[in-house]
Image (cartoon, rainbow, N blue to C red; front, top):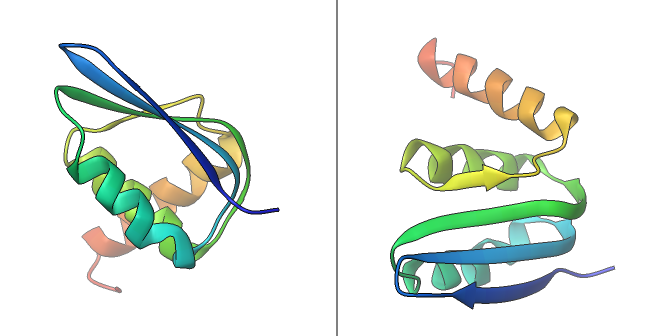
Length: 92
């Protein structure tokens, strides 16, 4: 399964609904979508099945930059927290 991105926006926000598997090969396309969005940016992860390390790090950077992660699966949230802890301790 590949990644599908559905973008919806209004005057104040943009939501990117992601569906499928998030892998490092999708980072560039997703980055471009984020960069071309306006207002409050939300990544809806409700239909994301799997992620890899590169995308977990990308999601962590997005969140640190003010992007909201909506419907983030518990395992993804835990992985983001662990990666943030490693960054904070200088291991990455």
